Length: 481
Image (cartoon, rainbow, N blue to C red; front, top):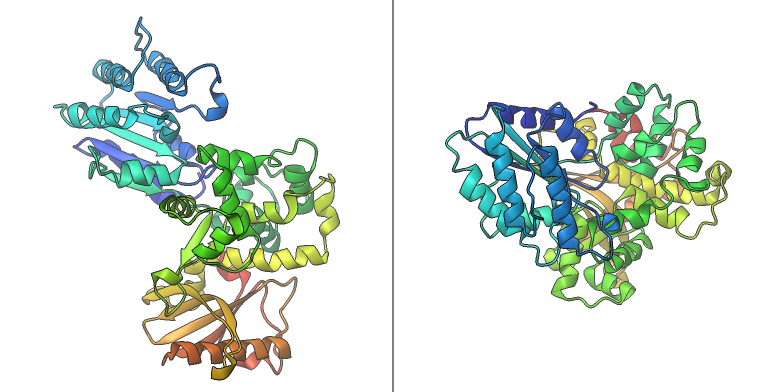
């Protein structure tokens, strides 16, 4: 298994605990949650079950009953048979109790995957789960139950399990939020599969696929990066051609408004306010709208940040999911020429997208940027900043996508520049940097020292304009563990 060492150690240590264990594992779809859990327990469970997605449920049958029937099948696989049809979740968990009572295993490891799919309207699932855990699993003298629940709908897990206000409040003994692979882990994964790419190609691939292991598993040995991208997205029946709809429909029961929000954020490169999203989508700025923003944030599709020096009401939202960004730029309105990506090499469209996508990759590797700056152990605040022009105050208007404010009274003002070779700092870049520093100091009144910091793919060419740059971070630095 590539990476996931800490997560695997946590799961395996459950077998040595003397008290019953209840663990929630969550993270975005395709991130490898199920694989992690199965590998950690060597594919051996007292009981395991995966909820049905909506696409698997016959429209002529109630969703709730379909989920219960599938659970009954899993109970049968575990050795429990009930003559009468199971018609409630209390009955279903009573069956699970019998499986546990009849098991000869020292530890009863119960794995329920895609729990959120099982929670259909008025299902009674959560109350039945509460009763199972509080009234049975923790009440057993043997204290031998390990319950692992998992779902891709991160927001659902947080609301219903992690931050439960009902019978599951404070019942979890642990939780694992599984993050995407880093660049380093993607490199290790390709090496394990004997797929040869240099780091620049891996970076380009990450700009498209992000750190989603399933997407990387579809890459084929012996093909160039453009060939692989064409096969994944642009050829007839390409495996990721319909991923966008599948991704959002699998996570959200009514995905249309979520997709509108994501599309609005995908139409701009910078962060925008909640009100601006409402205007772009036509969605009312209600409490339900705020909930949808939180859900998209919890699932890792968007980020919310408060610009330096501002309060919560000035929060900005930005689309950060690499695949979704790629979809809106190249897939949404594409006629699917099967050699499309090969033909994009060197195009202005590709160049413009590369700059934006590289910025997102940098934002996903802030820990590596801090390490390259030698400040891993220094307390920092990481955010962005922007201001409108105000000629009366000598403010020209600026946007800074990454600020690292340090306890040692330095602010690294980071500029991210994608380049196919060493980057040449020119007069225009120098002028823009000076403007940003001037605007930032005038608006924020900061006393901290400002360190212009360049993050680029290879490095810089030393010239008359390069001297003001205080630190240069390269793509190689982003690959550090």
